[in-house]
Picture 1: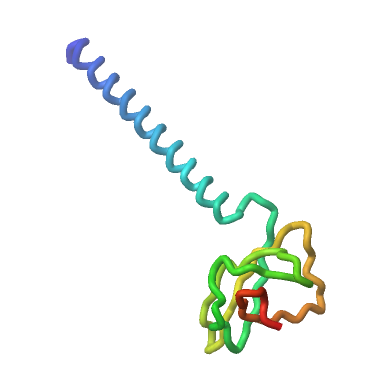
Picture 2: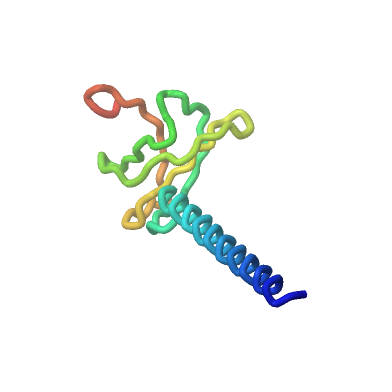
Length: 114
């Protein structure tokens, strides 16, 4: 093999390695950005509960309030065994009391319905 042919392969392999490394860095950056948008790095924690019904305007992004103060948001709703399983992301500064009972209340123009 001539010297020019060997350096051609070396150059091609070098460029391929740079392209592969660049794609890997971009892919890792996208994963970090998506996880950050989902709250993976903000210290929030998840809790979930099951309810007999959750169809009163509840959706991903709905506020989670405790005594009138927003402490988190709904991150998922799934039907499991005929019941609604609701997953919540709670702020790290708020600790859910062990004896907490959750209710789903629809919002009105003037705030939550009581």
